[in-house]
Image 1 (tube, one colour):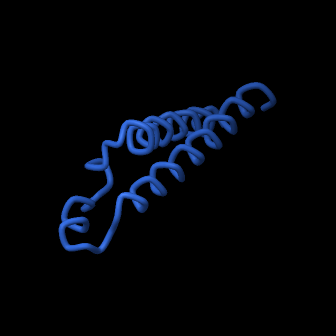
Image 2 (cartoon, rainbow, N blue to C red):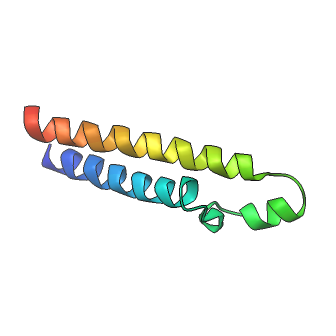
Length: 73
């Protein structure tokens, strides 16, 4: 059970940090293949912002789940 708590917290931190960098700091190079897709007009900046927002939300969810597991389990 301890491993699950640690994994949940680490995943939450990783997703949260990467999502923050993509969504708020506009470091779109963190999205795989984004530069090539922009050049070939397959993806836009809106796509990268959506990916960043999803990662931030997943990160917060995993982090809260890990903290809840630490407190209640």
